[in-house]
Length: 259
Image (tube, rainbow, N blue to C red; front, side, top):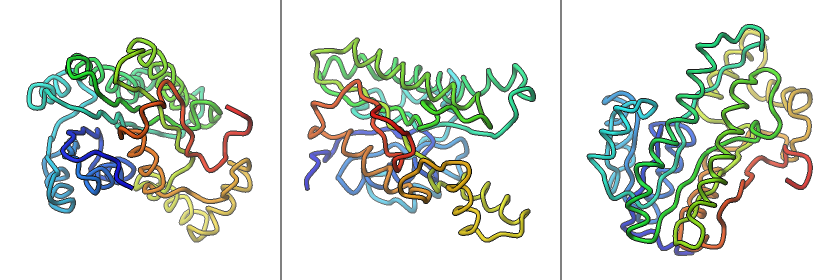
C-alpha cells in the first residue's frame, strides 16, 4: 500500500532509539524525509547513519524552550509532527517530590505543546498537516507504580483532542496513539535488570508481568516498537484523513472496555 508520504517532512522527537526510531524508520520507508532527534550529537549521528537516505539529524533537548525554538528555526516547514519524546520511572506516590512532577510534565507534555504550537501556523498556511502525540494506555489505566507518568499521558490525550477541535474543518488532523507495554530499549533494559535481580530470564519475567501486572492484555506479551510505528505512520498519511481527535490504541487489548 502506498501511504502517499513521499517527500513529506516529518519530525519525530526522541527518535534515536526505541519507538521513536521505529517510527522514523517506517516513515523513511514510505519516502518521507525525517528529522531524527536526540539530546546528543553522537546519538543523532549514529541513528542518521544507520537510517540512511532521507534522515536529517537534529541534536537538541526538545523538552526545553530553547531546543524547540532552535528546531523551528532550522526546519520551519514540518508537515508531520510526532511528539514521541518521553520519560518514565516507577516510583511510589509518596516518594515522588514536586521536582519530579514538574520534570515529567516538562518532558512528556510541554515538549509536545511547544512543538505543536510552532508547526501549526505553517500547517494552516498549507492546509495540511499531521500532529501525533505518543501517549499510552497508562493515560487511561493509571499505573499505581508511576502515577506521575500516567498523569502526563492523560494530559497528552486531552491536548490532542482539544487541538483537533481547534483545527476542525481543515486538512490538519491531530490524534494520540496509545501503545501498551512495548519492548522499547528503555523498557527492555529496565525489565532485564529486574529479571537479573530475580534470577529470571526475560521471557519468564515477561510471562509473570502479564499474569500479575497487566493481566488484561490480550496478546500476553510486550508489543514491538515496529507494531506501534505501523499505526503511527498510517495516521500520519493522507489515507487517514478522516481520523482526527481520536485516541487510537495499540495496546494489545490491555485497556478493558470500549474506550
